[in-house]
Length: 354
Image (cartoon, rainbow, N blue to C red; front, side, top):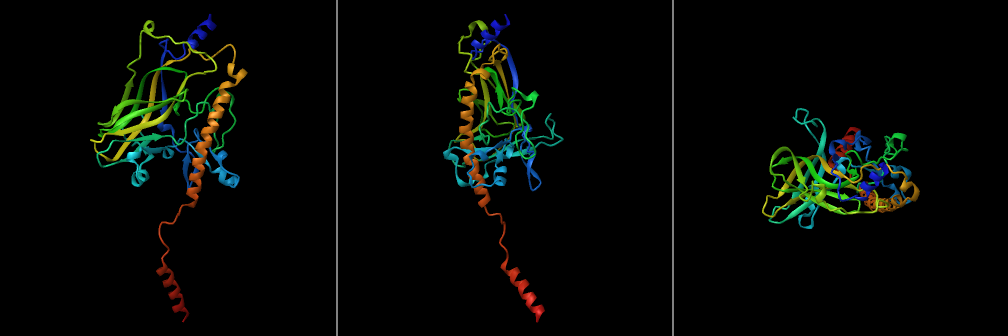
């Protein structure tokens, strides 16, 4: 009887036929503090989400250099990607993401924590423009959960970590997602008329955007998108039957935010703050506990995801390696060494000698 229920639930995978809605935190930016790999005494990366891109580096790099080729979802690593009509040298240079500390005296549950702070420089002329706030790399759906040491090296999975994934539990990934009912985003408005979208990517690698509303308010607020096509009556839902395997358990992952500015609205600097994104959704399957472990037997999903992850890490790694090289070539001097001071010292020495 139990087996029949499991198979029936799995067969109706994506239709959301069973109304077992669940709330989960997709991403919580207060969890993304930098806590490892210090530079000048300041941590640079987030230990939970650190990724090694030295696999894309050539043989000319030393082991010490490769050990520094790591990045994570630490907030300063996130990127602002402007559309072509909004992109210029100044806007690209000044648009950035930072860790924004919330005052201890703030009347919110996350007082004293760091949230995502974003600055975007939009055109000042009448022109439609938008910007995406994206993670430094695509969140991996099948990266196994394992601890990282102080050097950012991923350790072996412990027994209680078996079957768990690195980016679950508020780090950008939710598994076993059927029909999405609602999405919520906690953000601080600054009276900007711009529109906010949440970007999600599913297990078919399809990215969708969800309009959360505008930011024309002051203070913290939870913006919510409700699925207008969500059907609460089971008997009126369309039932679609999909193969249980090797499609795999459906998931969604966070692909970023998008801020859109209308040509008629104010341009120049936009500043915003984001705490988290939550999702209410139907379960795709009632339980993932099957009588036979299909993936252990066939390995189809693992092979497909390993190839996808390798391709993504290669693209991401090459970009990060090039940035690493560029950083090493950058000038570090802030001012010129004064020739006058050098001459004065030299002259002073000569005078003393006479």
